[in-house]
Image (cartoon, rainbow, N blue to C red; front, top):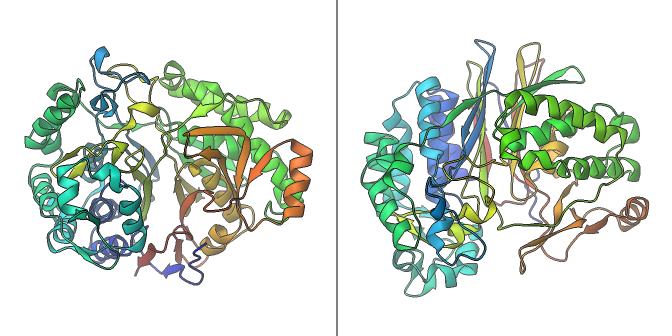
Length: 523
């Protein structure tokens, strides 16, 4: 495990935390130039898409939480994907047409909506750094080079990927310069025309043609009709703090809220931290399993009613707390997730915490490119989304305040995004950990995933290898839950967190400890 011990960022006024060093630097530069947290978030996110093409994509979803301290307002932005309107375009497991895997993306319209409401710099100024990165090139990190190598057989199916990522049949090597002129050209159009370019312009026309040639049924109207949503955030009290998370149709916020409301009914500090004490690890994993058993979270009709969702979050948390015995959970299937989280805080008290993703295996698991941008392949994990309907996005982000002052922002990605965010918040709020300690503390993850079969074993939970075997055996005996500690990489989530010292106002941030890239920078 690569641990970035000692690299926690500290800044007195403003900060950006991102999972790529160059992206974090660009975001911090935007803040220094007088940009708002929204400007920095836009600039950082676009650059993330450039330096990791295929691990995330603007042809995917985006979700964000925003806190405006100046006006005391919390907002939730939903940029999740939509299904195509044609019933015949809906993918099924028996369907071989990869074009049906592509859903209507929402990331660029969502960023435009964020910028229109909270931006200070021009839209084009926010995009110029990512255009420069694509045009002049960037040094390929080891992690990305390994990803390209592992997916070389898929990328071989794309003429674009063969000329950019597989040079002469060889995957781009770590330490080499990678230029993406076609991506730069695409971003120039977006800088000039905004989201209209990907909804009505040449990119939209090419995307429809590409999807339909691959057997899909996407239309220009599907792209043109997409609208991001400002949704009603979930709010709740937790031990004197106020937590806000995304509301429906985002399911991640509801899961996070249920976890925190359930945990509030127990004295976790007295039990001791779950990295050291069997009783608290048992409690935390049972809460996680109880929440994952709430089938209403996957019901589109329920999730379309924000008031009903808010009521169910409260009632379900009480029921889970009253009966934390692990319920039986149906077996699920997964296509895997690859995402990144960004947090931006400006000197005027605006905070943006959000996730962007391709929401499928890298390069959509289909390797279809439009203007150098990989399309998503998310239809396989959104089978229940009706034609023309929005997905129930699992993205989560949280913002914590006390007495109207910002205290913390967090978010996580990977398959273990929900349990990671839940544990990091408790580390910060219950155990008063600084961000670095909160992320370096051992934690558990999601259910064990068989990457060969793409199935989930709900009777096993991924667990940090640093847990001592004696403690693991004790909890397994008490709960009947099995734990997967490897060998190899064990996914226990990729959290990002920024906190603000309530006495001094100093900001501290940390990005995923297992990623060699990533920084929290500011001034």
